[in-house]
Image (cartoon, rainbow, N blue to C red; front, top):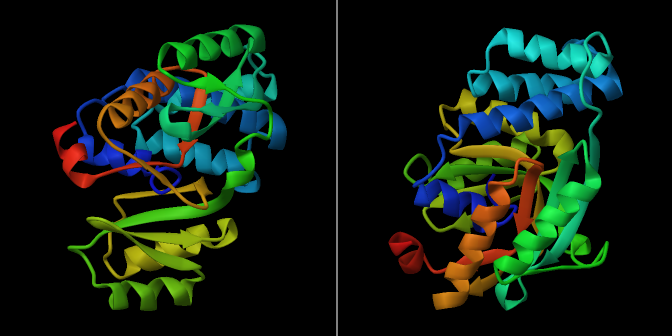
Length: 247
């Protein structure tokens, strides 16, 4: 989850937490069920389901869990009915926060997130207040140790990428959503292994926080990440490398 906010890169570098397999499974099961309900239970003819199943396998989710989630989505097994929507708001320093939600109880989830935002120096906003700042793009991070800018540029542009950004210790490749799979495949064919790759909502620009505000924003994003009903959190938060190293 890079680029969509430097948060993914921050989490990757910080790397202090995340063997939260149970939370990952919960989110993936919801995504599989919703994808199956929307497009049917056959991954070969349902691209969203295919992506969800691949993500679940990457997390080593047992095949039986995947099968049951698909069956709940198609109605073959009883299960919760999930709803998808987004919530928006601001963190310390006016940083934009955009959350994708999947829940079986909208009122409960909105109440919990509103409380969480308030508790962590943020506040909820009206629908549309920050969504306009983000664009859906493929985001792929490749460590600088694997390739020079010119080497990487030659591979990704030919495969359909739009841009290559300097992201500190990594290169961030940006692609149209429809070119994402081709670019990932092209990188792997050249033995460049992405540190992180996903289709995400990328901000047009970033707000760099320092000191106490940066620490508060980290805590807010951690709290949001721990909320099971939040499937993705996007932000235009950035911070200095030296402060990140000590976080």
